[in-house]
Image (cartoon, rainbow, N blue to C red; front, side, top):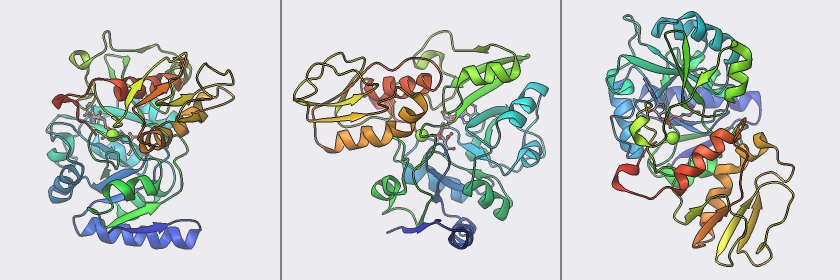
Length: 333
Ligand code: TXA
Ligand code: MG
């Protein structure tokens, strides 16, 4: 079983960094807290360790991993920055923004981490993981710390329940403060393209840079450029029904906002993502509530409409995947 170390105070954080470095040095992955979701991290230059990430998650190997860096200076050693990407990094790092950039000739990131692409997804996380990378001195490749296709973990307990039997160490940094994965963008020919909505709102990027962010023209797997953006993902066992205006007695409800809907009194469970209609609060609860609703054994999970702006774009993206028909093609991160 995995050892779980909490980092409630500075002494514990120092001990956790030492323990994590020992696991990384043994070519093994370690579960780490980030502001978005918990990650399953391994040395991005170490093929044995990266292989272990894919095996632990059951993740398809054509799906590249995000490489986490301590700071922009470290990132500049591994990728080629255009001026817009550099401005994005300066504005939003550390934070939930991943930039897809050309890999530099001098980078020793292993091809298994990038799935052989000539680009690399990079982000600088907030808090413990940034300090761990500084201590370790090398980038960490880290997908979300869950079995491929399942809902991403936002607490150490989620990680332990899913992967605890397969990994050595979980660092417990408390519940994730953002709750959905990073926003992924790629700058090409002076244009910013959105590859995955996430913890930084598109509107915030547009306001900071003064450029429109281009969304993919169509949805669905055909137009998807981040290779892991499969239609079915984040799949609970229960069916997920979106934009619900009523809830049935055999369903759990994920509510949003203060207005009641019909059937609430007879639903199996009602969890409110944000009674005050605060999208950032809703994002922090999304994955935990999906798991909690699923754990009751209900046939279905009804979800009230969520506004498709700000962090609502990422929430709706994840919900659409959670509700998608499950197929063999459906597994991702
Ligand atoms: O917030 C996050 O981003 C979390 C935490 C742990 O940092 N990580 C995460 O990783 O969500 P993962 O593996 O679940 O998702 C990574 C996404 C995938 O959709 C993958 O295809 C895309 O990033 N990606 C990675 N490298 C890429 C590249 N070079 N080009 C395009 N997409 C890339
Ligand atoms: Mg994932």
